[in-house]
Image 1 (cartoon, one colour):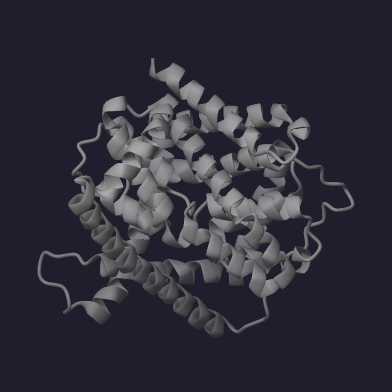
Image 2: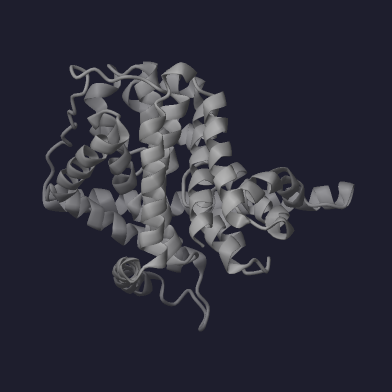
Length: 393
């Protein structure tokens, strides 16, 4: 029965995207069907095969070792602050972002990362039917982050049509940057984090090509990557260390604010209506949780976590899920875990708009105007990824 519900879920996501399409007659369903088939195949490979297990274990061990290295630096600076047996979230989850940010900077400096982004982007362009720029941008968003990626295509921002700009922004919001993947793996099972990264990459193309169909002329399909100003190796290290620390502090500040605000709103709702705000949102999102393949008995609680991610951010929702207080089945935990791995929330609208506006004010205003449609599309990507996984689990 759950196969039927999951298939209906996929159809529902495609239909919801089609309803918001700017040009329904131009939607090309063949590439969409091919990419959904690729998503299902990759999910089976990663979650249900020995080869996939080896891949996941390998990636997990790499990030585990990176976190160990990062904790050497954290312990040296903050070792006396934690009581024995305690593991403060900021020290163990957020500060290691600094070290991973440094590694990304080194790979950028050595020109390894740009080669990977161009190569994978070129391969994706052969599958998704979109331009090279769109495919590169999706891969680059995954590797360097949703705001930093626009710097690499600065030269072309001013020349992009509204449709192409939407696709670039949708890719940036639908995925997550590698610098915080290690942090996610401390709260979620690594196999679901890795699976979500892969599925969201294709899901962004699927939803964007339905909501925002267009043709890219060969003369327009030119990829010019902005070269970063030449720095010495140690200048680069200093910059990426500070950037990583800024990310850690910003995420920490947002968690303090959002979790405190959610607690206050929940308390007010409980006093006035005898139901928490999160439970109320859970009822609103329960139908979405159900079409993703989550059992009806768990759909309200699951819907509450999904809504929390949308109105706050993925870290707040992941912390809620990782507490283990909801008594979810393993299947529901897997579906929710995949759903949570993306930047699809209200705050991302401001982040992406600000990033584009800092590089091109006119295009930044364009992004601001389709901000809600951008969030709608990115949320559909998360729903689609969760639904695909529900077929496999």
